[in-house]
Image (cartoon, rainbow, N blue to C red; front, side):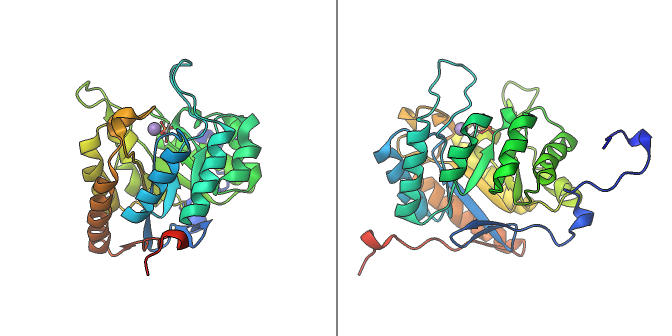
Length: 294
Ligand code: PEP
Ligand code: MN
């Protein structure tokens, strides 16, 4: 099908809001829905760095009120010499953290080769900004039928994002959420621009749930909470936030990682904002049985 508007009337795209005005709800399992009345907080480290690290952070973000655990096992790094993630071992640790906390897991697949193993361990597969137009990867991820979190490329237009998402739907995969994670700005003082306008704009164009990433969208720890609140005010269905118990030692994205205590505050503030716009935050997960109080 051509996408050239000069070629006349075309059927609406599968991502178009007109096809499903009520909106799509993505079910991540374990009682977590994305796109319903409740706003989801997804949190965790940029990368899984080891067993103690991920189990400790997973429990900390659960206790702070997050409902989905994030963490990269395969990391798309700008330099081939930077930490690339723990790979399959990282996926196994994420599965252990899910069992320990009851939180569904979102983690990235960086190439077609790793898609089956990521699909086996994850509840939602992330396609990162740098891979937004890796069409072979999009198709391969779409064929797993797993929920997908598609991040907007840092130089991608809204239309390119929607057409990238269309690849999943064309493969028959409907459980897709879009993530605004900041575009490149012109000002070295603020090189990352979280494009919050994209949220209400996308809302009119697509039925897919919308997530905002104030961590990569700002790159600055102190700016994460204000932009998380703003994203909820703008109508995001979820926010995804990087959290670390020891950010100065983090192997990636420490400067934008918030502490668990800051996440707790962020959750409470975003809850207030959600209520102000007629929504609510998903209720916190209860403590795992092994450490539950009397
Ligand atoms: C990430 O989520 O850690 C990540 C690499 O995100 P992005 O693809 O948006 O840069
Ligand atoms: Mn990161």
